Length: 329
Image 1 (tube, helix red, strand yellow):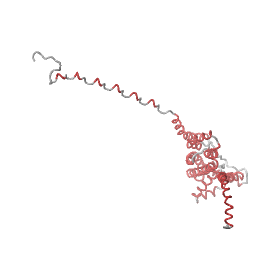
Image 2 (image 1 turned 30 degrees about the vertical axis):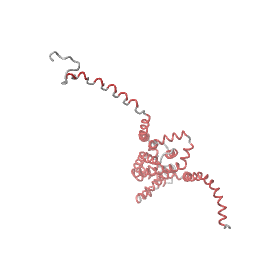
Image 3 (image 1 turned 45 degrees about the vertical axis):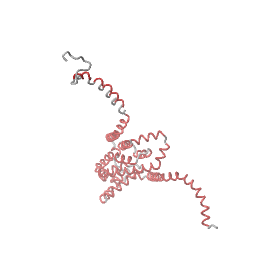
Image 4 (image 1 turned 180 degrees about the vertical axis):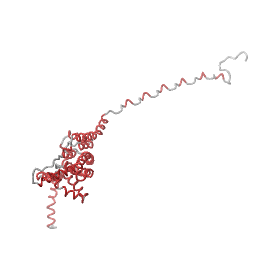
């Protein structure tokens, strides 16, 4: 029986496919790792383009003053769309760890008022932090845990046990870099819902502080904006706005936020103290030997003595046995 050309080609390709099977299985983990690293590479590339191109410098109050009329007009006509655009910009800034988040927070209070500005900032910051957390955990989280050793594994386990309290503290106290607090939980195996909840709750006090400052700064910025535009119109190159967003973090504000952070650690401290405190001693319970002693019960010999009752011979049956009859009988 002769074989067709297609059958011969299939028969020749069979062994090749069988031989390629183990190679594909060996290359599988490497391909999976490469796929996980794609989002990291994209984020690093976009970050490099923005920073090297100097685009992050446009996140400034000078840019806001120069374009204030256009921005206000867009907000007046499309407020919901403007809020969504602001949230998207904040997500991008946080996910790429671009400098300027504090300025954007103050600008949110200036443009939308303290309430809606705070809502937009909390949404954008939480979503942006969650994006970079998921990317870091998917790409490197498992590899870091496997290669770090047993000591790091014990530390990570301790952090995960009280992850919400730790994260809440780090978010409340504004002295820790935001990007670092986004990445560290990803390498420690913190759960997504814990990270999301602690981030959304922990950034509320700081966000309200900056948006309230922004809402009160609007009138001041308008006055300085007029002087800034006049300086630009005069052709000068040294025009600046005299305001530093970091000046909002006065020692009093930092102390207040640190107090909030200390409150976040109280549940963890209480739980650990209870876990370390000794439980009730079993020997302090009722002693079994202290129960009623069987020998202390009614003694059988102490019952009613038959000799103390009416004598058998005193009954109607006659004199007791062995008694002598009286002379009258």
